[in-house]
Length: 126
Image 1 (cartoon, rainbow, N blue to C red):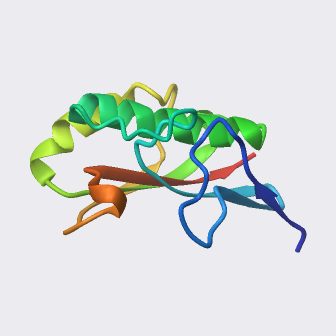
Image 2 (tube, one colour):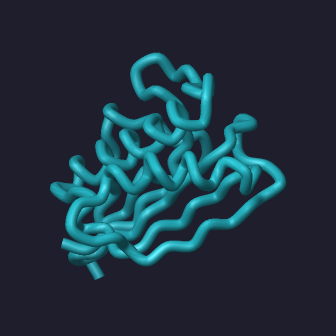
């Protein structure tokens, strides 16, 4: 199987031994994104709405680098540190999908990289 590493300066650089995304055939596997602003490397965590928008923008930019968009997303995984934030995260998340929603799971975890509140990964297919 032919595999291609997807990297864009429009999303945060990986902070470990992984790629922003890997494309295999017509499938794209995007690593979990947190609310790091790609240009400033600052965490956008002033509130959960701002944080979630930054995560979704990072995902959007990685999808675009692979010539895809949210309409191509089949599945998402959302990791959150406090389920009390679920409704606000869900409201922002829902604004990025038009027409249909992908399969998804949401998991509360005890901690995320850099102390953020939300991390989202996606699987897409063109």
